[in-house]
Length: 400
Image 1 (spheres, one colour):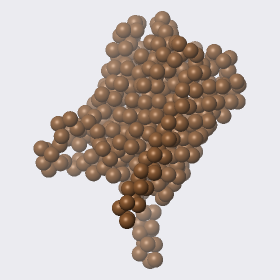
Image 2: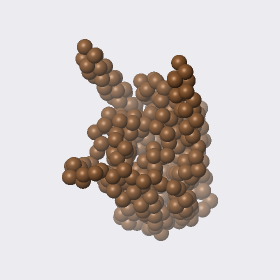
Image 3: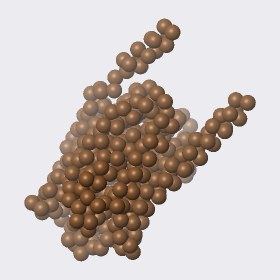
Image 4: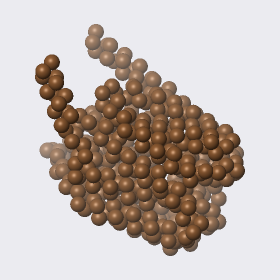
């Protein structure tokens, strides 16, 4: 009992809020703030350039697929070239690309710069997740990643609403330059972080030539794909859906969503650390499922904001648990690749969602987007239950 009490005391003494953790959280906030301001405004920019709903889906999707292609390289580079190198390069590319969008006047050039922006995003977000994993004590990883995620969530609380508010007052050129400036602040903050040295693999020959994912991270990464599939529909088409339904309060949607996401992240990670993903995944996905059904219906502002709260609470419960699950069994020299695998599926879900929902909006209507998203969440819940039952059968077999 005394040994257990001492061990618990040691765990309590492991600090999460160190200087480097605070710096990486601040850097993450500013890069996400700049990015989130573009989420609801980019579709409006495409419309101004004469683009259709299908083109909106392509422009959003091409960004995420570009990031997806870079993630495996980013994972390898994190282990071979170091965290700082990958992170700083990614941030620099992101700043230049989003600043360039300010001066674009054609759909063709916009698509090109979105591809470049995806490269910067893929490098920087894979790196920052790995850097946070390095800094957070292993015994408090779920809790720490939940707090780390709050930096992006606070950006989400104000970024989209501010972007929509500024669109009516300033030009798109000024808006995108402001977004680039936020990325520049992230770059300056990240230069002050003390990065941990990478554990290099002693024998390079053991690394497969086509090593593009970490197998221990496959299950949680597959599950997050289905969840972020729905996010593509919300981020890309919800402002247009609200206008079509004559429902106000879209700026408040993102604020309510982020507020409930903030609340869930303060305790969901702790539950994961103590009891595992079984106690967070199904409750979280059930709330997302109900939110998608309500968005498909969308009769009023109250329902819009209620759905925002459910989606935020559910996503804030599930996402840090899945990320912690993705990296917990990976070797120390494979944490970067585990994060790359996780965020590759994260991006793939958003990209597939944007492309699919763009086609659905063209063929049917915006409501069908969210009904389809509800179906994706239901499939993820079924897959999760199958994985849990399979794991239990293997455990029983090993014990017998």
